[in-house]
Image (cartoon, rainbow, N blue to C red; front, side, top):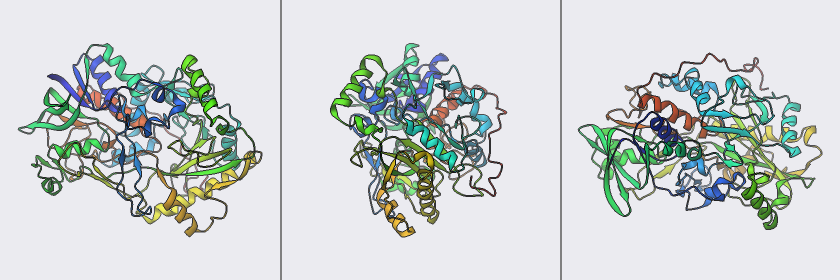
Length: 552
């Protein structure tokens, strides 16, 4: 069995690459360990808490005990399904800030500055403002990925934005446009009432060309001969086989599985590979290093009015919402319920936002369990650019074993200061006039927790991953010893092998990672096809004029 290109992983970047290669007439084979993404648990936006907690769809990874978080092991979901994590995520769409990508370029990712990547964001989007304003000139109109906005009918969505304005923050109609900083509508990958995953946007149209073969198998390693990747060894239907690649192999298996596959293939830190009896093909010390993520807290308020989603937190209501969605693709089931957001700066001297807010009109946990009985609402918040770094390493030489995931969360003193700031700024926002009709009392952390020590104890016990791991196969210049791939995503030291997913990010971007991951797939597609990159954009993003001296 052979193909021109083999892509390992039918996730956000993998599907995008399959589409672009297939529509250019190339023969592509996509290897995916997970199964079908059919069914309401994935396709209904409001059911988002279910798939990421189902073994059917999730790899089920956990971190090692985190020493700064009371030795808790944190859930680390990754999609094991067609569409990858785009089929189990919260469907939140955030490009990231312009300065994120300019930083990438400064770190050696030449050709990945904001002016370079913005045309790819535009190419991939079909953007819909939903009647809530925006920056049309900054957005795409005919790409495969539909990006929309929820109806924002619950008054709490507007209260959150107004409260931000009353607290002195900026308002933005489009955080994915000219101005990320401020409070405004949140965007989602939802279209026609369905989750618009990378599978729906890219893979299915790619398959319709007849140039894509999707096979279900578990990749074991990349087969390398005389310094060149020539195929992928897989377990398929219980049997071991090698699938040959005529041109290139691309790993798009996630920031946890892509470095694992490189190491199983003999590419990584030589001493670590030797520990597990793996022959070293290329000594690349950066493989599996530079692991980053976003941590967040849920700041929860009890509601004095019965207007939150809690009124639907019963079997009858859930059944009615499900039925309406099933037959009409409308109603409460057609939104992820993340419909207001904010990006703010933590202090003067920070040039662009380093705190993100998701607002949700219910007090609930990511696993779908109500954290508080009764009506409430919450803001998910956390710092965007922690300096803490972790690693992904091999548990053994057995491809069936989970990788060892150490995030090393909260290992920098600044992390604690930044999180306390997030809590205090959120309390200030909830104390504004706009929330007066709705707030009964603070559920968590709880008004009694005020001192630094009290807040630190709360953070250690309650901080959760936002599920944005990245950075483990960092992109940089070919002479950078800690880089894993060059600016064309080619694995340094091996011919015919690339990595294209969130693992190549030099540094984590502002916000959720689905959009940047798809963008990576889009841009690397042009490199695979030998095309000139899209022309650089001239758009200049907004920065707060007083950022050096003012926090807002």
